[in-house]
Length: 266
Image (cartoon, rainbow, N blue to C red; front, side):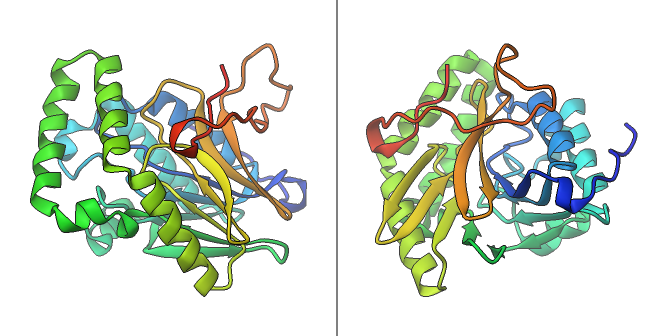
């Protein structure tokens, strides 16, 4: 695929875009949509952050041709002179130094985006999930079992099991609480995490908290967008009947569900 054209930074509608939990290697990863989004984002934002769990695990034999195409797109855009692309390490990604050599992308444990109007802490959030830190062996066994469930069960069933397990762990609230406290300690007025797979937006203790959800669910898929002082959830793709000619996504209607998650647009 040819490189996307250079777009002057002043003509880009977004200051920063954040996506997370792509889980390439999983049979439920929305790889085609991920690749489309990456191509669009490369000329629509000044900075693109992939906030952890790009891989489902480090068994690269599970990556399909479409998944490898996503990795090539990430690598290609990481070399653009007009875009900063950063990969935040997630708990499924393995050691940062190893992955950095494989994919050739700048990898960090956390990152603060600051455009002068918003100071946004970006980190995956697994460090605040006490279940996976206290029960490492149980988590490892569960991840192994879930791989076979994905292979054998219908995709809808596999997605349902993952959602139920995340809610049962109640890690959404744990991650939100820990992330907000950490962001405040770093002087940030906003923080975004992934990890829980539950897209949401909330205000706590004067800090705006957003979770960018996952790209393993049926579309539209969520991401965090920063424009000036505004930090919000948006969705990809928009319904064709509503999408403008330039393809720019907009914020979805917000409805609060259990765990404070944001309802996806229908």
